[in-house]
Image (cartoon, helix red, strand yellow):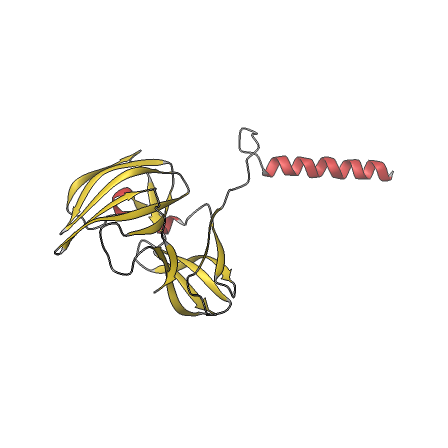
Length: 211
């Protein structure tokens, strides 16, 4: 009797597992793979705190999207969810260069939507005590770079150039859905104009620092 009860339980459990882990075609779905950002904050002396990643919604308001602890040594491991609310997704021409007035950048496929982490904030309870960034400079110069994290709904290739007032932005790279690390390289600083190149190649020398 006990054997029959145990057997029935196992059958029900396995049936439920395959039901809730299959798509409509009956194919087993893999678990969502989270994209995690880990690091150590330079010159950290603030003890244990919390790191928040913020996104902007379509109205321009920021909201906390993912959190993780920062330990006493400034170490963190922030794992980002594999989906983003529709309210925070933008058309391709608003992911990188909203407000640019000329030039041509090709997103292939063109129906991609996405967003970027607008800020990383260090909090004590509900109070923001600092902002966090990853780069290799304090004063901008040719060769300086900063790191961004981009969400896209699908894999996409991005190429081309945009002109934004005095600035020039060039793109050459691919984003793999859901999250991709994108590097913004400063290539020219002349008067009021600055040139930036976006790709996925991070040189040595960047640190996580407060600002």
